[in-house]
Image (cartoon, rainbow, N blue to C red; front, side, top):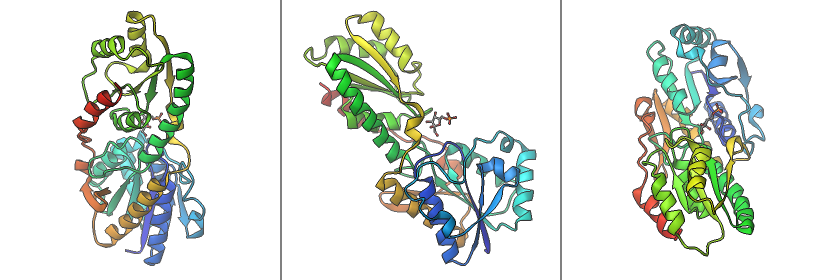
Length: 322
Ligand code: F6P
């Protein structure tokens, strides 16, 4: 192996830069030439290759976003797009690839492996944590901390006005941000796509809960089947008009910001391990960290996102918010 390529793809996440830095420097340490591909799979198709050296990744470990930019590529979903991408990789004599991204990225990588023999290893970069084979994806910890910081502020104003707030957090198909951040802010209830949403039960609990509580915070994952924070808040308002109810959608602030210490460390370990995995001949696997150890999960298993939610945590939320 002489030359490796690295790119970021899908929704950006804090820690992608730290991972990229680790990939570049580990590759250079192993006498490999490194190129970066701008804009994920789109850049692969459009031939946006840039050469990277140790200095290119200096002072980025603490920066959110991704210096390589990112995209959700429609063209890579087509065979023609993937063939163009392969032709560009061959033109640049690439013998190994590190892809930093989420489940769309790894589904794309799996398809790509049907036409390409170039070894490809993935690092899980997504705030959603919706991949099997790692305890924490890159950016998840930072996103949770962003939510906690924002909801603490909402709690102050909710408390002053005796209000009920519905706060919607990201997670298109997964409630892991909602669950962990909800525990961190002492939410009264957490509504997530993994469990059946019972608005009646929520109304019952709000109507019969402790009366001397001045504020109440309900965290809603955007992907929940009940239709999001506004829809649920409307239903509750109709039935419990005495509550002064407000809705906040946190949105993309959850994707930005400096990565937490934990994200920087995990990203560095994963980027480092991705290059070592390529050198060991591994391919089509996602690097993860499970119980503090580096793991390798085939892409087809990683993207099944059947991360089991710990039922004890949901039970605990209800007890601790009494
Ligand atoms: O990257 C994951 C994620 O942040 C999801 O939680 C969210 O639903 C989605 O991306 C938003 O994507 P976009 O960047 O297209 O708005």
